[in-house]
Amino acid sequence: MIKLFMNIFIIGLLSLWLPLLFSNTYVFSMKNVVYYFHILLFYISIVCFYIINLPAIEADSPSLVIVMKIAKAGSVGLGKDNLFQELTDSILIKPRINDLLKEKLICLCQDKYKLTAKGKFIISIFIFYRKLLGLPKGG
Amino acid sequence: MFLIYLQLFIPLISLFINAIVQLLTFRLIPKSGLLSSIYLGFIVGFINLLIFEFYVFSVSFNDHICITIANLFIYFVLGYCYFNFICLGETARRIRILRELYDSKDGLSLEDLLKRYNAREIIEKRIERLKNNGQVISGNEKYYIGNNQAMLLIAKIIVLLKVVISGKRSEKT
Image 1 (cartoon, rainbow over the protein chains, first blue to last red):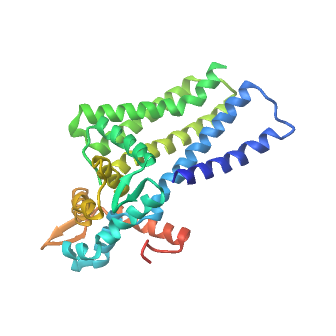
Image 2 (image 1 turned 180 degrees about the vertical axis):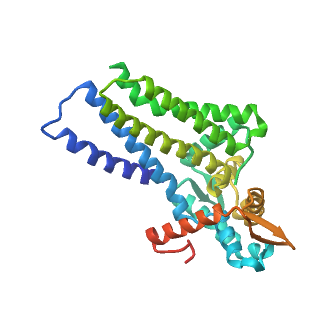
Image 3 (image 1 turned 45 degrees about the vertical axis):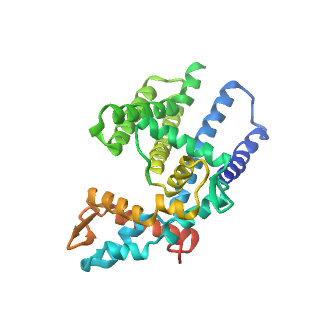
């Protein structure tokens, strides 16, 4: 995710600023620098929007899957046991563990999952903010 | 010149006010609920942005309108990102898995991890949330779609986006 953010960010930034800097009409002034930073802020917000929405497209949200299954059942209804049978750990948990391994946020050392430095940093931000809000573990 | 600098920071100041109001509302008025506090924070930040845009006038009228539209866009997008940041901590499975591993200094085997956090818990929690929001109703130990069908609509839109972007309806297929 961080790699994706950096790639999109750098490519976008270059394509945004290079034409401006090398154009004949570019005049260096503080006013222009402020305007370019405004464009940068505009651009960062779009990149953040894209990055934050990507996991929702990539991974199936359990709530949405549950709603779709209940809707499919229609007037017959759907029992909780059906959901337990269909939505197992292999579907809901293991793919997310694999995502974390791929992103190098966790590692598998001697059959045990452990946080990497990157994983510790990211979860620390969430723990700090949830403590500020006084919220328990989510999920 | 100061006003031009200020124009740049208006959406960031508004976002900061949004976060502070949300935080204080949720902490000081426990009955307010997380979602309501997020809405309130967003509205207060938005009003703050409009007030700033009304008083901070550094360029021509046409340029000011364009900058205001850009600032509104930036604020809406950043506000949406803040909302998602809080929701991630509340519902994301990856964040919860990281949290469980953070709490276990020696790490966790897959079995131990699944004892602490598993599909059963996820389903129970989600069903409860969906019932509380009126998205799902229950009767005779079965679940049906409720009158509030917003989540169903979102689910259909996301499936459509998945098909357009990845060509698949879900992770499995």
